[in-house]
Image 1 (cartoon, rainbow, N blue to C red):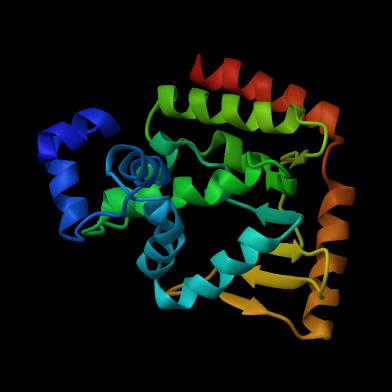
Image 2 (image 1 turned 45 degrees about the vertical axis):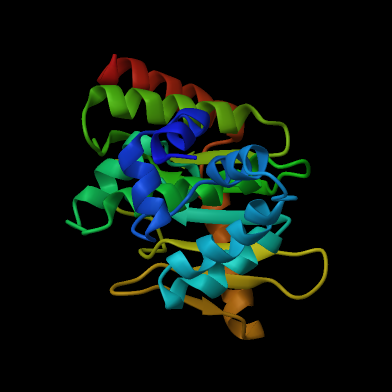
Length: 243
């Protein structure tokens, strides 16, 4: 089968097929599933290998977190400036990542989108998201990108198992936490905390650190607007700023 023929089956171009074949680009799960469908005797081999291909594409320091995120049953996240990668649209993610001038931008976007499968799998992760209002007003890309992103955020907020809360801007600084962080919870085993940082984030598993993170998150939730009011605020800002 030629690259052009495979590209037609996978709904992508010749160039992308060539780059995946030579290891220059990361394949999506849909691409792996297409290979299993069109290649004789594949027997699901490509889909089985796909998690390994994705895992080694992440930076070494981030791989452990991605593995834990995939196993988690609940994810609680806070961000004071941006939408977390787990809920970003493809266009928003590309605009955020492009700012760092990476040489592998499209791979980074693909990896970020693939992480979001935990929100749509048969038993999706339960998401709790607390954001500063500034996140909604901080324009990333253009108005169309922000309108799409806030629409996506509103959709996630309407999922019964999810919670999205916004800390309103009262005209003065009052958020007790400055660093983006998240808490992963599991059916078995203790919670862990991930803290974003430069040049790399890190995972904390010590009980004292996890307890401190839970205390901080409880305070953030108490300061934020209730979920229903938060959804109204998201919709209002989207219409006022990005229509």
